[in-house]
Length: 241
Image (cartoon, rainbow, N blue to C red):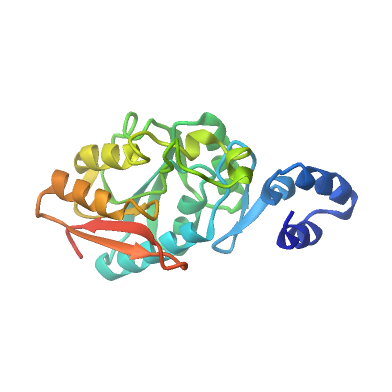
């Protein structure tokens, strides 16, 4: 049990629930689930075991994507957030920039959480069920995603493996399944000027870059960028870069 988790519990959990929270923490439950919410890009995001706990790395994905949008688009943009989970990415983007944004997820339980978070944060985000593009009919300037990217045989922290939804963590093909699916099918859902922003596993950048050029040929630029720990964590694909 980490001291930072104890401090988080004391700070954010009401005193009459502290003993119960401490017991759950000792049993290995993430402190964010015990408290019931987390701060993401200045927004209070409700979380439970139906959704992945938002990470600092994903805040940086939002920040980098906003910079690109502001650089290359002068008008309102349309955005699709694939695998929205708690809705944290979509809600943050909606509050920062002028956009129409849709968040999709295969999990109706996750979408229930996302809709509540949108209401909590007073944002007008459209959330609906879709297995990647299965129910998508529109075209977008920006497609953003933090999909499941952990290989099934990859070692991860016990607190994550034992608590967070595996549907939001693991993917086939050494964790690359959803990147391949997104990049293979996304062209029909993109406008003429586009940005694709992806969060990735630290060893996946080169493979995803190859995928991008495979499906888009030489019509795009691909940039692999690093997170706060200087690890490859993001891929940006665009015909504007």
